[in-house]
Image (cartoon, one colour):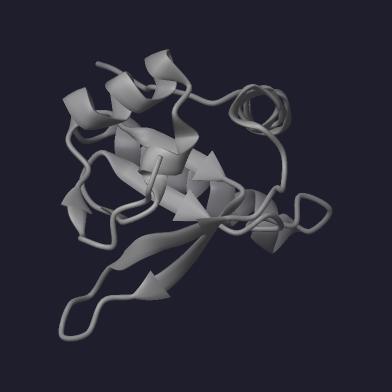
Length: 114
């Protein structure tokens, strides 16, 4: 399936569909926003107090807003003229099922809902 180069808004419905269908290549082009935050493979160094603080801050931001998904293992690039990024590539060179299992295991992928 060809991957689109367009920037897609990460609504709750879009994210839920990607996770449910395990079509993780659909994350490519997805713009970070209110419901979605993408991090590199080593997005948080949990061996340091600063790394743990950054993770807690990001999780609490979703908890204090409308909920969302924080996903580790995605390569991002800045969007010109915007204060956000889009997913450029999946870091893991695994099939979608393995990637999803890896992400869920390392992060305990979360939809935080009020």
